[in-house]
Length: 80
Image (cartoon, rainbow, N blue to C red; front, side, top):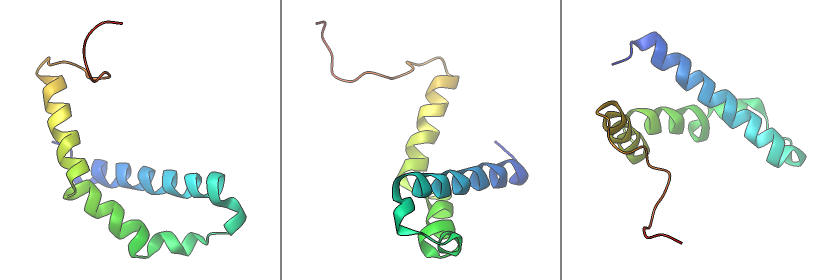
């Protein structure tokens, strides 16, 4: 697994991406940077990274890729 510093760096990048997303798509609402330090920002990000179903799905996906499994990208089946 990754060490604590690597995990912290990834979470920091995620927080910066959240801020950028909000500025691009909701810039007219003038969202304050402090908002991201509230429970709707850092707390949700940490919860998602360490215990949410998205993290669990990502972990399974990464282990599958490492084991040489399918890389995804599709869904459904059949040819068209």
